Image (cartoon, rainbow, N blue to C red; front, side):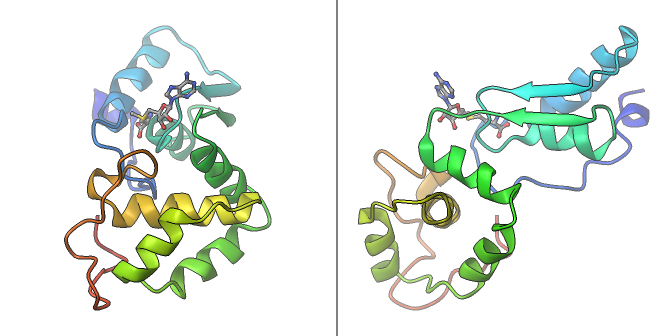
Length: 154
Ligand SMILES: C[S@@+](CC[C@H](N)C(=O)[O-])C[C@H]1O[C@@H](n2cnc3c(N)ncnc32)[C@H](O)[C@@H]1O
């Protein structure tokens, strides 16, 4: 039954979050079905990777999503993703130097605008141990002085 409600779960959040709520998506979809609910707006207040909101949108179970996060890097990331600057962010990632030196520079940077914070969030999330963009983040092993980080890796 769950598989019937969540027909698709192919879109994955660009942000890695250990213990993310993605696997709750089927459960939430089932609650909506049994309660015969079709909310216009789905709010994910501790958004992080926003995995449940993404699954709700992908399966057309809601019309709109609203995301909030205390971490201003994460908040800026989602703001940019749903803005006209999304492509600029993607280009910046494609051209990013995934080296240990770049990781240190980006980690120490203090971007003053949403685009800069969004880039810092995504870069550190994808290249730091456990994906933590702030706090005590450490580079994950593949980031070294050579450019060995693969953009497709999880
Ligand atoms: C475990 S992550 C969320 C995982 C996400 N829902 C997913 O499935 O990928 C928790 C997020 O909540 C945010 N957070 C923690 N305390 C918060 C608060 N008081 N208000 C808003 N966001 C908060 C953190 O910054 C973090 O990004």
